[in-house]
Length: 596
Image (tube, rainbow, N blue to C red):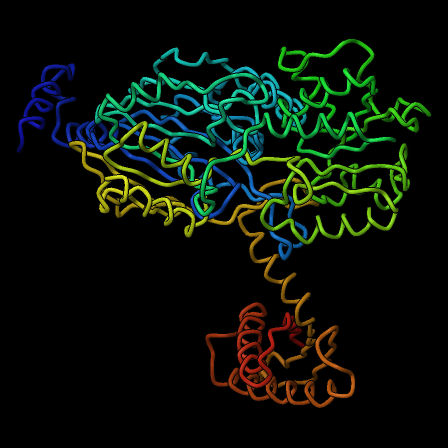
């Protein structure tokens, strides 16, 4: 028995009220409880999302003894082949099992890949407090209100460089530059040492919102023996430095000044600094701004209310209330839809489906954005449709009308040089990008073995200032929001696979009648849709019916398979295998068995 157990035994003997309570069984139960909840001195970093994908479902937890803090809670937009899915969110099973330990949710900034899952996951965790800067909390409040969760969780406005304590952790937010105002990195002081999460960042000496990064904090971190840094790696494959927002502002000002006719500018609704640049130029050039798109309207209202956007009364108006004013040559339409989203305002304008605006040949359409990975086809389709209207189009390939919010490789190296951590975990990026950052960090002097390329669900343990990968893993199911119910589903993966099978290879339905007493096959009625050409289908279906007869004969001797679902499962498995082997195709097989 070690010293700690001796101390615990003496404490239990002293504090149990009488000898009857101090039974060996009672003492063992209490010892087990204390060990489970208080004796584990390992610091854990639990990665629940954001490692295996760019721009999606960022969420992680830091755990020490009986305390957990969570960093970010984002969603991811599904790829094109995930039919019928609105969003993908992190698997929160680990947090749900340990929700009694959660001291708070820390949010680095207000993009959906960092806050979008809050409304889905927060109620599962008993609505812990959320800590972030004012604008980020403003966007979170909008989201909670939309999902009728306002008032359920307290939103705490944090001030940069002002430490506060949550359980075992001392927390300090510090400003970084990104494509949205009030973006932050986070310093977590733990019993093992300092941990730094950079959040999403770039280095911009002339940011659109005028708020500089906390360079002094970064310099001080470099002198304070940071144990571990989690560094974003989105643009690790891009050499050089990121273009400043000042350059973009100057280009947009030139376009707004020199364009003869109506302007339509599409950008992401969270680009508050970019919007201020557009507003300032429109005011100078006596252009009236008309806003279209629900998220754009809401974010401008929130930013104005909180003091992050300034404009004179009457300069900005909703497009739906503009009437014929939006038809004039001095009109500037600020709209969502730069990513080619099917229901966004710009898409509806391009397809002449917008209730309040039609694009005409004298218009100039500016895409103050770049396609997000996976959205290229949708953006190209939108550009094609706008081109058919005869309007002039300006994208980032023509002029500097957009810059990324993420640091290129030299910016990432600059952050590593500032902080100089012992251990580095590249985050927020595809594995390939993270591996590029690893190589760069090695060249900067970090030991190769101290740079860890992890996967979602993996857990990093830290003890005695040494990191190692835990044998334990968190649950990592694919959690989707179905567009029909707007609820979370972990079994939706099965539905997606079925939809993909139908979309790629069609469906075959077998209505099978079996005599229950003898297990003899009575009849098979087969239908196929989208599976194979009609002149070939009758031959193939006849062969499949023969396969069904063959497998049904085995039921007579296999007494273990008697239930309807068991027979259907057996037939489905064997027919899928046969078709894959013979035709190299995987249609959706649906056997329907009826016993008579």
